[in-house]
Length: 62
Ligand SMILES: [Zn+2]
Image (cartoon, rainbow, N blue to C red; front, top):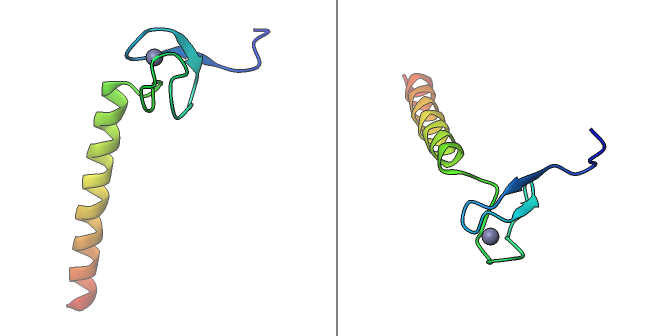
């Protein structure tokens, strides 16, 4: 538990990269710490949010 920064394997080249880093310094992949599962959860969350927003706006309109 002496690590100050969390590292995760790059989803493309598997090198250890800083978590949340925007670009892998080894292979140049964007968001190397974001895996497919996380991307899926983000997408589903965004769709649910937009759906709820549309529902609320419709309810406000009457
Ligand atoms: Zn990489």
